[in-house]
Image (cartoon, rainbow, N blue to C red; front, top):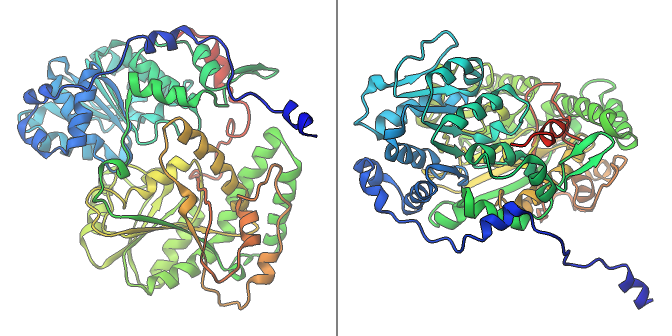
Length: 558
């Protein structure tokens, strides 16, 4: 019996050749600590405002020749570090800064504020494709405008680039990424900023690394080594993960500096996560809705491939419709606490329902989603931050998970999940960041017998992969479980019923957790989280299966 068991064990060490690009990097000897002498030539008022770890980040970037990925956790001041690096390399300007549309004006304000020696008229914001790019020394653009104005930008030429939220460039096929790569080939200095450089898997890092060093390795070499790349009947598949500890070391040596709040901000307030199961009596408000949800769950468990993805997309959007009344009922309870809070959601039906609920309660609130004009976003944020009467911020997960500060709130609610744990972590950091004076509570509002059951389990695997590669430091295992206040009496009979378990379902999923939980008690559990997109037709291609981008990349020597 023992011999049979031993015979099936796999070795813990796999012996094989080490790729030349890995040997080349690790044969350069130990890395010395960067000197801070370089800080002496940077704007003194800016240097004096930097914290010690931020000064270290600036020195690291300059030590790498101004080609670096600053991947500090959200809320640790990557903008300040990037502007300091840009000031050091002024001789290489003109400077192009690409960011999300909602943060263009923030960048302009920070540049003028932190670098007072740069004339105001030398800093321009690109607001439309018709704008004249001109001779400004600093040009700030959104990613969409960079894509539309690619030829003009290439013709102008930029010696230095800053890409904020650089994980936006993960898709090699996207025209935006193509333009960014072309600009990077002509630039001497490139600073990438992202608290989540890869949202779900190592392959998403490749284009960013190529921008920093186009000779690093080919896509096939990278994906074979770190993405368990292999040839399948559908083409080259790089959706997996392998040698993540080595990738973590390689990134730290050559490209990336990453610090977490826990490491560098011991005085930062605590963040506590909770999962709340919503009152089921509010879920099935439309006739036939519960039957639809059960059909989705059954069909999902019995399907595979693209059909499975399509079912999950519909399941996810219908979940928003089902959860909306229960979410609103929960919000009415929270409003009794008389505290400011943030609510994140994805689908418009959920955002609209929340807004209608708050209006009926005569609550002053702000709403920012993809349709909110960029010039109105900063005033809305300012209103929430400064006006005591403005109690709630209703935010789109996709439009507002980065680039804004909402430290006036100590409670963050997620009405919907998202596919990527990194998106959720970014959204949490709108409140839990430098400047927050109180502990922050984050609550994920979950509904039994909905797509939450499935998505909840998916997120755990992504988070574990990113953690192994050193790209995610969030630990959701400390999230506590609570039940939403119920007007419907005993919830136990409802929780005793379970959906058909999705293929591969494990006890760590929401489905398994809720069945074991004792309703009414707060219990510790290992929680995973995630989030999804802002349109009904969220694109799941490649999320569960083969990513067609890999076919194009594998054939290129980049």
